[in-house]
Length: 412
Image (tube, rainbow, N blue to C red):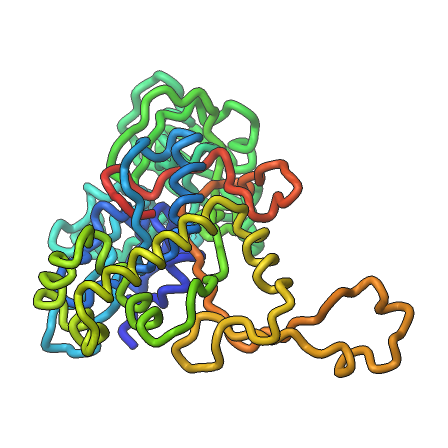
């Protein structure tokens, strides 16, 4: 596996847009989905899950993170190409932070490191700083940045933190006195001999007001009234993904339904049988799946799936899942390798042969052998996980506040 490759589950979980990531040679922040390279055949897969799409669109629109009326599609992160001769879809990243530290040959203490900005590095690869003697020193991203609870993130303005409004052109150093890597053991010192310990930066308001920077998008959001807070890049509170999850529910179980369901995500534009015919010629997977069925049959089944999904989407996701599993049907879904769901309601003689009084309150027991769970990353928070909606099923609610994954995308 290449050294800069991540699994799709890692992207949806820990390393989505806005997350800081240490690569072997530098530190980066994962760019917004607007910048991802999703071009090329089989660059990604669309996920057809109308219940989840409708839930996300409704609630993200309500809290201002989605434009009302804009379609919302679900798709996988870029899928890597296993053929090295072919270009592979990519997730773009941006270098962050812009402050770095380097060994200083003039320092008597090895734990005293020179602080330099990204623009001061050797422009060829931005990996080295050339010291006063002309020697190249390896640059390491500084561990400390700052942000606010709305997800904004930026470099610490070290000169301003130390000197206030007074301009100073002297160089700065990071001095570490302990082995614990804690803030109280680190100090930023200027060449004019003014300094500040990192422990002091935890004082409320010490880092100043947030300017709304969103480096994963490459812009600045106006109107933020939060105060900046210190963040350690490797700390767990730098990124809390917001993920919504549902279980795929079967609408019907015959062969044509399975075939249409597999490619339903590629047929969102189909409004009549004539478009089905066009899609057959444009997409080999659709052509293969619908082989042996007419365009009229395929379109009718597509409409059936859409209508069934729309009806299910009107319910709370967990309520719909519970109603299906508690339906009492002996077989739920289908026992096949391509089925999204296969479960069976067990006979009471199997799990309660003696009619134990302790089991009297249990109406039925369902064994789930196979299911498809769809998880969607729709935002993130920093410092603390986003609160969930307060309702009877709060674990299925979407958080009200969080940072966006992009601006111009039609998929979360």
